[in-house]
Amino acid sequence: MRTAWTVSHTLFTTIGGIVGWFLGGADGFLLALVTLVAIDYATGVIAAFATGELSSSVGFRGIARKVMIFALVGLANILDVHVLGEGGVLRTATIFFYLANEGLSIVENAARIGLPVPDKLRDALATITQHPARGRHAYTGPPVNDPAGDPPPTPPGDSDSPESTQPPRSSAGGFLAPENTPKETP
Image: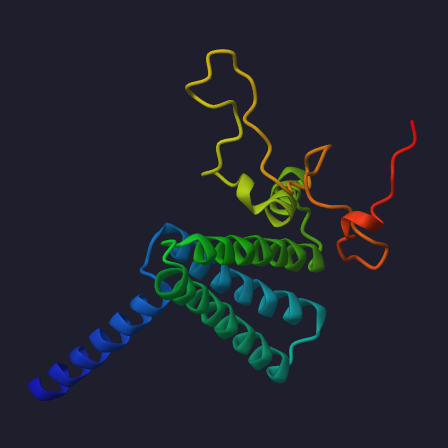
């Protein structure tokens, strides 16, 4: 009996270590994602049952999609740590993307069974989806050391800024070469 306990303990410790390394550790972002993935799957099953659309093949496809979410988080972590050396930028962005995606899916599942959803919650999730950098860790005010309170300079290519520093795009979506850039008329 003691041997079985030792083997199972070693197995789970090894698997946990590998998963933790692959996903970049169990920080608050990852734990939030695990929680929302579980809630989304459960609410999807409840909504499918309530609407009479419960299907094992759809359920298995849902599980495969959830596994792929964590595979992509792991991929982003590997790229961050071993290729870019940035320490979590891609991983965090990937997790934020899927947090918003799972949150919207939970809201959709609630709406499918006729549960009213607060507009503020729906709007907040839509904002995170459209602008992931505006989460709780993004400071959008003026620089702390700027006594005038002037806003910080806009990063190049910021699509929210009225004057983007990126070259103009063609109608096909590509960038125009300087010689093909439309000239402004006075």
